[in-house]
Image 1: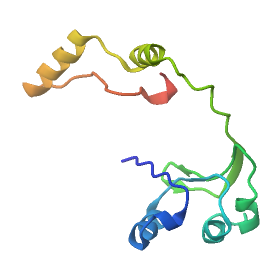
Image 2: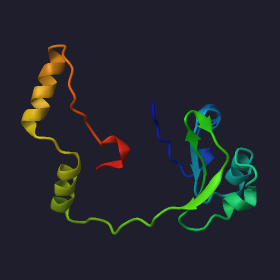
Image 3: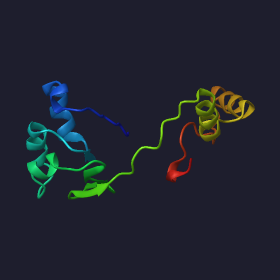
Image 4: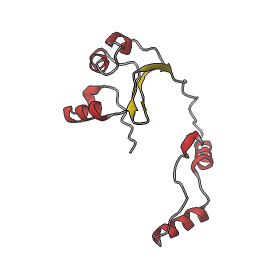
Length: 132
């Protein structure tokens, strides 16, 4: 199961949730964080320090990746800036249809097979392997 939990401060989480997240999250990505959070997270990102985590620049991240079931040591990297926002609702709907849409007949046929107990190869959502 994959779950993305994104928040600004660890203090936004209850103690139980914070303990669960920090104890079980396999891949962790950190953008620049404030002092207290950097102090807490530095224990999970050695050799990076509190100063390293609180001093990350814009678009810079520290990452502890989980690869093939093993959480590796931290690496740093840069993300890309966000593209300009889409403000045209029709253009946004069109882009979403092109990326995620399926012909109605295909969806109805797959639904019918599932209801009848058969299997279907129809995938819902984003394709694996980075394809849109």
